Image (cartoon, rainbow, N blue to C red):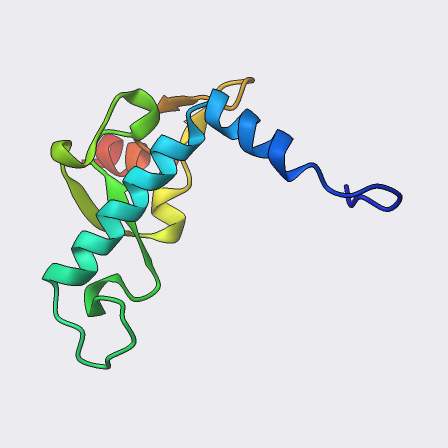
Length: 107
């Protein structure tokens, strides 16, 4: 909802983000992206690693489940990385998407 008659409370939003530990998780994701860009080739020179073009850096163990960059990261498509099962509080329930579960059942 946009603020029409009052200024946006940036300071309050920042305090809420820190309280929910969003800053630490966001910083960890950014470090993983920067490391991938620094270590992988970039032939077109746009600053992103070629294998990361249009994709996400996914943590092998989700950050919300205690994962870190030390647990490992991989390159995944955006849709695959953002389609996890969640509960009513929007917390991660399973790190395997419905699509992946269907694949394993068929085999």
